[in-house]
Image 1 (cartoon, rainbow, N blue to C red):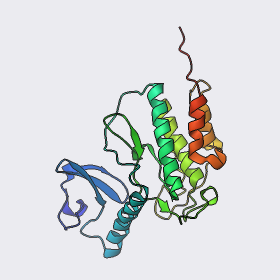
Image 2 (spheres, rainbow, N blue to C red):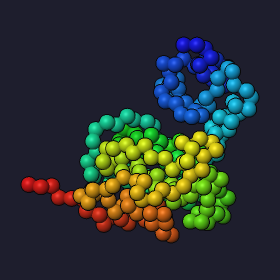
Image 3 (cartoon, helix red, strand yellow):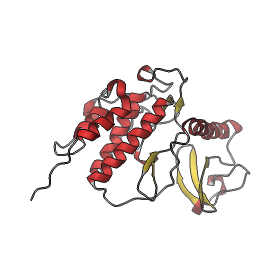
Image 4 (cartoon, one colour):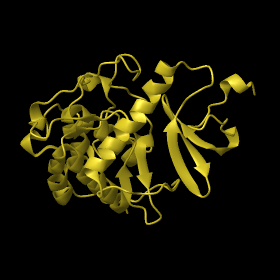
Length: 240
């Protein structure tokens, strides 16, 4: 491949393409010495401004991690088996607690997608990829807060509902809350219900997901309100 299309690391060396585990708009994950290292995407032909723009997103993520530690620190595991409803409920609970912890620390995630969930060897899940997150002032009333991209705890919850939908149905929606595909100048908007998937009446998590998809649906409780619903929901009985 043309060297112009090979990213470089912070020392200016080309990154071997076979070591790249994953990549996004501004960052990639590289396998080095039994570790997965996240770094900014930078090419030799980039201007200083272009390189700094991507590196600033890594620094922003570091700021968020410092604020929320030690709540999340989970290694990646590729999980392909269809989860049982019991395991789905566990994941819902862990993700709801994770999002609640972010909001409690005045952080809006802004990019909560299925690909931004990590899993460990015990099948516990955690929210990751905080490069697009907004760190709000510590005295912010989060129920009323909106960041520069129109993201809020309600758009976070809507996105969490999409993640729940993917977990419960195994279907990827590809739905974006951004009007410009999630680029840096995109502005999010809370989608109308007809833009979101139709939920089967037999889906065990139907009420939980529907409430995520109503702006302000969980009220003052926010993400922690999901836990109360999880405690009362009953899985559908199997037909004999």
